[in-house]
Image (cartoon, rainbow, N blue to C red):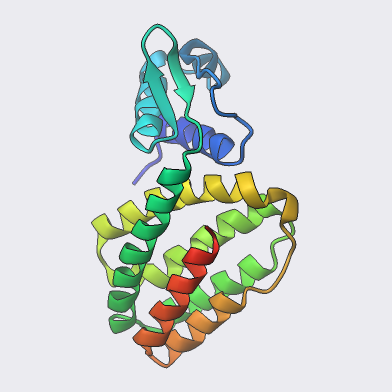
Length: 199
């Protein structure tokens, strides 16, 4: 599927919101964004609606579209949803696992461990989680999980950026080892602990 201008705007703005570069309350001005991307207001409007659908922005009467504040209750909900949906996806993923899918997951694990800064690590962390879950072959489930990862990443940047340090992720390694053994019970138990740790 070819990326559109709206995709590019959405990806850029969502990343800036997730990392805190665009803080809560910041006004997202259509005309400024359109000029920055050298485009019309139509793709900008589409991108802003997608940000709103994912809870990253909110339209306020007479105030326009603004970046939403982090809500602790929403963070707890996201964690619980990730636990439920990612464990479901991982169980199906292990049933469908191929050697090439396992290699992709292990390569993603290594790349994540080698990240030199938090933005790189966070992107690679999402790639790792996507790699272990993609073999489940359930597109709607994976799409929902992707959205949850965006919300989760925003929380991580807000609370862990100052304390982040490069390290090998033992949970990632243990999940991959359990997948190699096709041990779904162990893999999902580690994944649950791993997701909850982030909260």
